[in-house]
Image 1 (cartoon, helix red, strand yellow):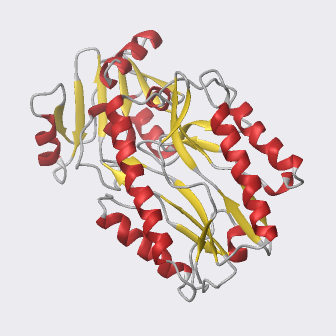
Image 2 (cartoon, helix red, strand yellow):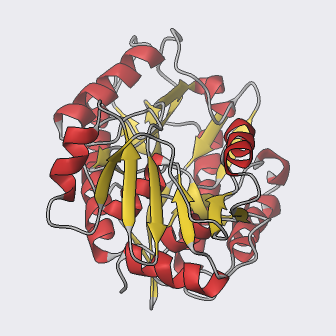
Length: 355
């Protein structure tokens, strides 16, 4: 498989670009392979030409970048104002800010043609290398272990916020670089809001508790959702859970190269709708995961492109009944030549916490 720099240069040649400018940390991290240098500030610019690969940064990061660049193709340049030769066609990502785009136009004038590219880098990132898959698997192993810990730790009387803090504490001590996203813990009717923010709601016997979380290893993310029952579930709770589990498992068995995001989503939605809960599944079935928690390809009604080996996606059907409960069962895995391989070992059974 071509290395990222080779892949980008091949795409540039195809599009007739003399240079490509990248501004987003995740894309620069993918392109360079540098670790331990990126934080929350998007303070860097990568410039790739036919012959050069440059990182423009500032004094806060220069030493770390120079250490990573030793012996490789990248040169580190102080300052964030790259220069281009007159007449060049320079590719830019179409999601840079309007302010930055206007600044570039004012600075470069008519000397350089700025060419907007749509999902060029994201498209190249969709197919994961073996090295990337190993890092994602490592993040998923920590995530699996965290769920096992929470099944032993959870008890009535703790709050959602306390549970979220314990989950993140264990995950970080197990080797996670950071939480993959803002951890979701929601009990009872709160889980009817898919992105509920943990609060001081007390977890009680009889609740279903939904946990959505993930670890990060060397900047690569994991994403998992599991639901546990605080005491024996009611028939209604178990029924809803079983529908969601069926949708998850049927889709996982169906996924393979050539399946589109639309087809995968519609399959899950049809299972839930057949049981009479179609209106209570309102989000996309899944999304890509890698250096960002949400990247392409997506499993939803807008993605008609076919999946290919190396795509990493989530499968996360759900049913959300306002004032009652919410259930989501989420795994993530990789599309292989023969189908779909989940990265998780955590059970799909509804775990019952003795109360």
